Length: 354
Image 1 (cartoon, rainbow, N blue to C red):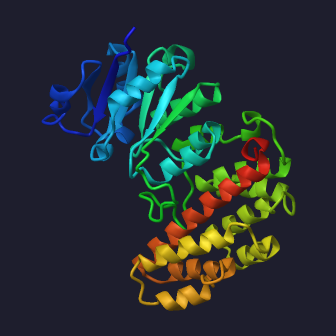
Image 2: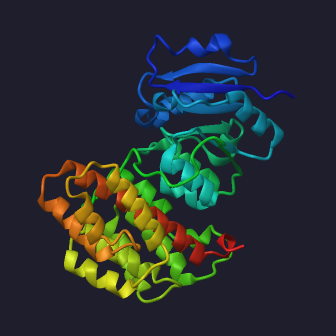
Image 3: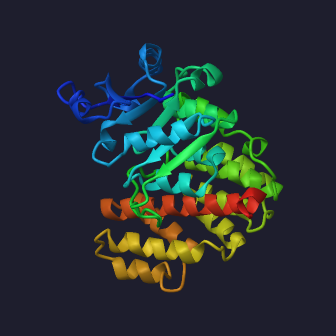
């Protein structure tokens, strides 16, 4: 039996919503979703679209992904060939860090790191809603549904663009703040998902590093206090003292710069420093800084990475009005946190070591 795909399009505007229909194959139907962007569309609208749909598969596409080539017929065919799969994550070229984490992390972890919209396109089997429930009334209903489905054992196909760059992105679209504010109550649902990831991950190899993964996820989502409590609970432990590293990042973002330096000294030389130094150098060179050579020397980028000097750079960003330097520092910080999360995951779970 042929599987029918309905593609819900968000943020396109009424004039363009029906444009693809004329050239779409018979098994793919484009449907107006909402004039608001997908991240701004609430659960009530999404659930009504599902209830009114006639397709076996449903895709949710934001306007920001419109200029990235996506073969909807290929995605439909993949799900048709694998009827046991509940959903497919399509990662068009240019999906940035979202593409990286779904290529390098297992679904249970990738689903917790970055919201899937707007960079990615989520294809969901309509029957999966009966098993995993409707969209919930939270600040990111599609992301919440994806996490719930994956953590309940839902099978995911990852469809990455083979032409996409496989190396680390250098300037992601959304950059975490160097000194963030509290996430706010609207993200309580996400913090609830970040509790005890080791309960859903197979074969814990290092209990301390498994806790540090959770501390890292909380840090990525600006829950500094909760991250601090967990990193403190495993201080000095783990294969590469990941808890201490996340502890140092937390104090740098608090900001308590002298305390951050203390914890970075306790970490010592870390395996990610060489790669981080290369990536930081690329970011700084692309930022057009007047003090480029000074920061390259200070951060010791020719030989690796100096985390103490990066604390000083972050402190200068807080004190000085230098938009280019601050953006570069935020991009370096996210690169650092992604590399550290990947290393912590590899240290913590046997599934990553085979």
